[in-house]
Image (tube, rainbow, N blue to C red; front, top):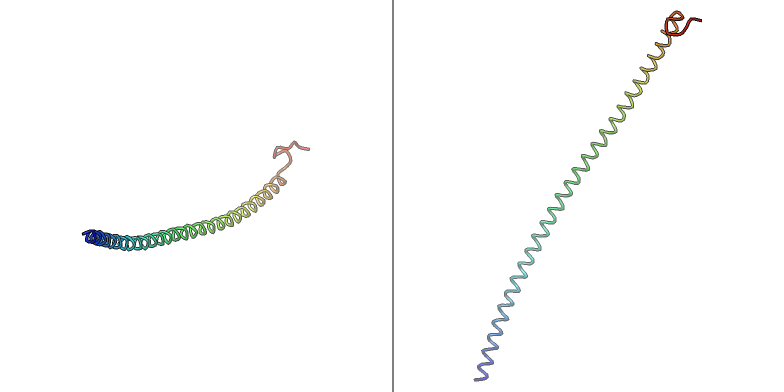
Length: 109
């Protein structure tokens, strides 16, 4: 009778162990699946961020090229304006020297 009681306890323990073993197997499979999903999600997020970084880098590079071009254009226009101002200044000097004395604000000699 005591032996039968022990046998029942051992059987019950064995069944309990088998259930826990099944539960652990199930949890282990779930954990592996979740790990795969998380890794895939992390990879997708990293790829998306890299694409955004690449897009921004290309945009910044284009802006830099545009600014370099603008600087070159401004320099060219500045040179052209400087030449025009020097030409106008020379023409004004010639015009002023061709006027009779006293006509351009200076007192006659």
